[in-house]
Image (cartoon, rainbow, N blue to C red):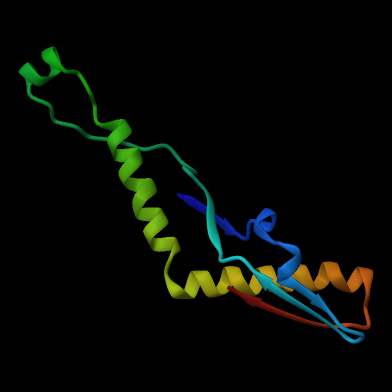
Length: 111
């Protein structure tokens, strides 16, 4: 499973950015899970009884996929992974702003 996390910059408002002569201060929205994707096939071994197969033939694939996605989301919310996503976001935003104004000090924090 692949979980993509990041900041939804559409939630950034003008009140979240302040400028001074030598500083740019930004209060970013919290890191959110953007998507959960399956990277490989799911091999499911389901031993349904004959009656179950005849009356409600469901191999359990959809439920297995749902469970995997939920577990991936839970794992992605560990402090270590959130901190990595925050640091990566900070680095990318600072790099972008430095193209526009390389002389300003940039302070970024999360709400």
